[in-house]
Amino acid sequence: MTKKFCFAIATKREQMRLILHHCIACILLTSLGKGVLADTVHLKNADLLSGQLLRIGANKLVLKTEYAGELTINLDSVGSIVTDGAIDLRLKSGQILKTNLQSDTPGYALIAGKSIALSEIGFEKSENVENTDPLKQQSFHGRAEASIESLQNKTQTRYAEVDLNLTVQHNAWRHTVDVKKRNDSEDGEKTEDSQKLEYSVDYFLTPAWFTRGNSFYQRDRVTADSDLHYNGLGLGRKLWKDESGSWEVIATYNKLVIGSRPTQVGLNTWLLSTEYKRKFENEKWDVYAKADVLFPQNIPVKLILQSEAGLRYQLNAQIYLTGKLIVDVIGFSGGNLKNHSYKLGIGTKW
Image (cartoon, rainbow, N blue to C red; front, side, top):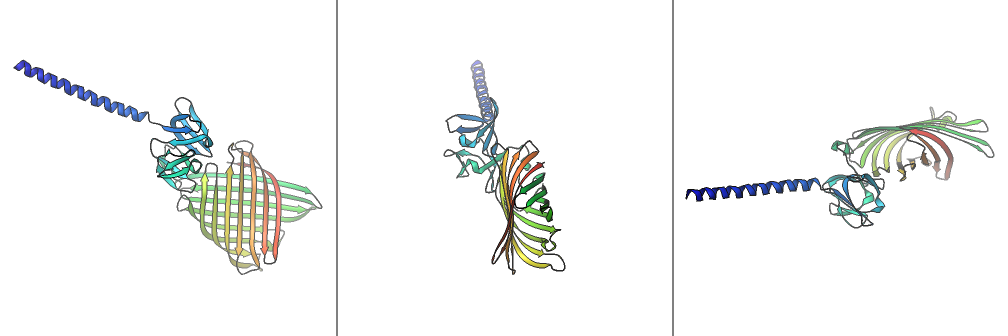
């Protein structure tokens, strides 16, 4: 009886041991299974790639794989992307989402139940989550550019300009300073000797919306009554922003002063500003355009436009060549006074 009882206990212990080993094995297999989970990229040619998604933007996708290292893939070749967990996404609309990507129709991803084009998505993996917050960024960049042009037409015309631009971002604050000096002459006689100083400070309420305080000063030493300066406050919005570029629009209400003492004229005015810049896929070429349009009130001048558009070619990491068109317009009730020029220049950025 004692032997049978001991045998029963031993058998019971063996069963418990087997059950315990089985549970441990299940836990290990489950853990290993989670370890091998990966993001998946389905290409339009039916190929399947798995790895760790590092970046989406500038019409490119970067996937880190164990078998081929980092792969850079054109978004045009991607059918769908599936992530194994939630990631921090930034849409061109400025919306920030923390969610996973799910398969959808080719060229699109299912995000929070909505079908969104892959080209509208921005993502960059970062070990420091705080750095992915657009309102907690720190950056400093600038450029210095010189351009000159000499035209042999009915009169010998020469243009020369130097431009310095600095931008500093600290968390939700962004400071921008732009300084320009321009000299024009015709047949050896100076027609313009102007200096421009512009400063703006932006405070980002959201990744897309920001408030702006701006100050602008322009003086021409040749024409005494062409002095112009204004200060204002307003609101701006990033229409889109990704690794390839950005587009912003800003509207401010300003106090404008035209002329020099004792013939100064002060008035209120609206200012509409826009700035667009975009890199091409090879990142050697980029285009930009910016314009400021003043709408003075209660005077014959309907608008004052200062605009510039250009194309830059990057020679190396710092030096670039540029060609640009500058258009200035003063609009009156009876017509417009226009001035435009083309310039070639060289610049550096950091």
